[in-house]
Image (cartoon, one colour):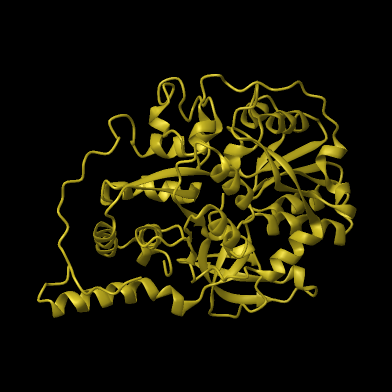
Length: 86
Length: 382
């Protein structure tokens, strides 16, 4: 039930009161209307995490790369040690 | 899909698993809190990638599983009222009450509808002013801002024919209840990423300190889980007990402030009954103040009898991580998703359903993992 899915904001519709601010979010080709009240920092082109019709977070794209950077570092170390990275 | 599929990369998963093999020198028991994480683990066979030192036990983070049986009975009774449109997330429909599920009620003619969002239920109330629309507001902290907003918008727009049957539970008090129990086996936690997206993770610092237990806020994809396990094992091996954040792409220390403000405006903290676990102090939400007029409990008084759980269901032990689903004699024999004895066999987040659907049945107490992982030196530490 705590499932949340990342999607890209493609349109923002101002609903007057911030509680009614909605946007269109693209989930790999499927577009849905999403309430944006809890992500005032959301902008068109940004990725948001959506749970039961509400965006609950804007994805930090730098942090998203962290685990891959870690694995790359591991790969570089392996190469230095003369092992072939997997 | 971006920010999703790359966290399912098999080679990267194997590399992370290799690091866990390197780190783990002693047996450690780690609990993932959230049922969504349980499903990722079981579906992807992540336990089979781990050294035998690491035991994963599955936590109580399945809102459907811990919703009290009395509340299911109440939901069924409300759904049967002719004026009511009863709306729920799909997960709740098959959960057995003491006699019936909401699905049974629907089959008997009750107007029970599955909705994706509480705002869909509110929309139904707007378009059906002659009916009473009731939403089964079940969930952890992740779902609370959505349910709070439904009540807030109903109040703002003066929609009177809408109400919420609230069964909201909170993760940190349940973790404390598990940790303070004398038979607790958990030595480290993967905290539920999306719960922390909303609430932040400052509440976990005193828990980590008091119980000397590492808590790593963890996401939901295979790489997230393995990364979270690696961070937890590193702490355990090094004798640390800190709160760390594996899921920083979606979760900040302070959480989502606008969401927290709406939650506090609409809900207050109360004691809650957890199915399988009993009452936990200050472990849930109910509507507060001017929002109590949207409480379905008040609108539809219900005098049900004290409900009985199936005596064969061991879901309480499973939700505490003391037993695994396949260790239950009824598992896959008398208890199946079609004919469940308990809620963990029904919910898409229930541990029993995960074991059933992904074939992790008897014989799956893990075999010794004999694969020798290549030794590396000079790798970056975490």
